[in-house]
Image 1 (cartoon, rainbow, N blue to C red):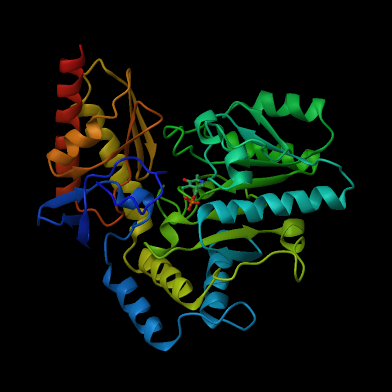
Image 2: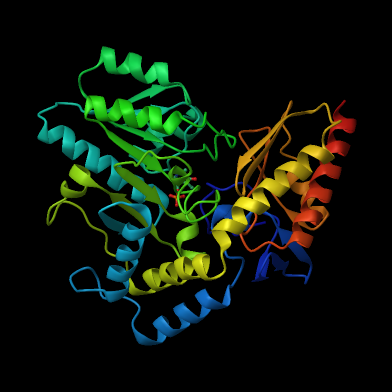
Length: 394
Ligand SMILES: *Cc1c(COP(=O)(O)O)cnc(C)c1O
């Protein structure tokens, strides 16, 4: 039982992890677990990657924080690297995913205000997850996330995900829309992978309407899907991209990247963060990007992700409870025909960390450094548990 000194916003936590290395973590009794969740897509390089550990140890001994009143060389280097790798023009650094999305929402609002709109609207999707701050929980398409927090800010219009017609209908019906905010693959919503041309269709509409295309790559970014950013699987360049989870390999950091007119909307004093882009977080981010390149981990995410999909589909081919196995790179979902939250505990008893999202989707977010042997183990354990679950629930 957790101490009563903590607020009750998280569910009951029964596992205490005290050490990690690569794809493994150890609990306080010394038991080892294979981690196929990576702290929810955060530790993409595995736990305690030596390059990140060395970078933050060195920075901790030099300078941790000075505030954004001063130049921060690591922040500038990380911004330049992200800009050159993403095709964006500039970056604002935050400490979390929700804050990166807040920056994106503020960019869209600012554009709407410049256009003289009283209540500029952002199109958001059913099943979306964008965070827990007031604006981002409003953008989130899950009533449970919103329940009990009225009044919610205005300025959002919701449509079905992966539905280009719905966007066109909104464009015809409203003249105060300024942006679309969408995940390239919905993560919390159940690993929903849209049609391959979805983003390029959205790009066309945004060009025609002069809207911003804003992509939430907080979960899909930093190599997870087999490209640095998921939009790089296609040819559509967004106007705004947010990312966070994998960027610091566990050190809190978020980023809002922008291009073109979106990159010019913030002027001095319009936005800020005390901690955002501090030397420690940015050194971690630099070490992550360097390691992704040095160890060819983005390519690895693509090939291992393909391999996992093939092996899972093979192992679960005869399992009627499985509705679909889908994913992009190392963002993988196994949708069952019934709620399956107990699989998290079953897997844990077998020494494997996984997660269930949207009630009935087993989610795998292994580290990009996972070995073939570890991935074979993951498939064997997960598929055996799902087979057993299907038998017992039948
Ligand atoms: C995790 C996540 C967020 C929120 O990030 P926090 O760091 O928890 O604020 C937003 N969008 C997506 C797509 C996410 O996966």
